[in-house]
Length: 337
Image (cartoon, rainbow, N blue to C red):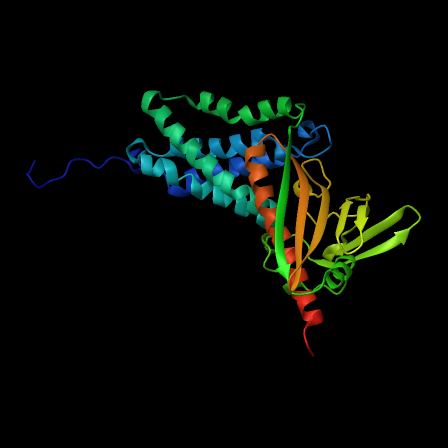
């Protein structure tokens, strides 16, 4: 045979083909979507009736396994620590994007869940990479591991939820008398979206408030709230010191929050989040009034460290946004015309 003659060409069917990257990313995304659909089944509903999507088995374990699965599907020569950390982000983003396209999740849930999903996926990718350095699991073993969220979720749904109690406090100086601010607290009408648009909660999809009006009822004074998307609820007033201090609690009727107004898992007054009470204190100061707000709230999940941090951020930011609203309106009301 001449030196430049090639040997026989192997059949095309025996040529080694490198798997397309879309396969490993698509597998992780489909796994996430599949488990998301399963966790809304009645079998995974919690004691209070909420779907199993708020179980730690889903929120933490599923993205971790997406990360580990992505690394497992990588060709061995491509399993570097860098890919183990960052390749899992692609299927998680595809999974979350799929829930949005299919209208499975709303903007609020997506915004709140995405950071922990991405972190858990990176952690899962790293743990999967370390494990694959030592062992080479069979496909049956991998399949059994992927079923863990479903098995653990069936147990976790009956576990009691711990409560996290938080309080947001903020204050602002307003160049207006206490009487003007007091009137606004009890009679705020025609609230426009741009008056609240800087608040994070409203940016991610919480309906904008329209009005808050205090009325007298046979049971006592009640502050009536109306938001966009048909949301309405009452705030029975617990303490009232004219022009100085007011505190109320929250009451949500069965029709207070229409189905499309808020994501099931972040309902105010729901199983996982509730506003306990809110108070305003008005303190006269030279040239105006110091308005202080205190909001007490509850978070109940199996991952309160994360959910509580989000609540602290959102409620605190909302409190400052509301104070800024009263500041603008009150100072405009007393400004020379």
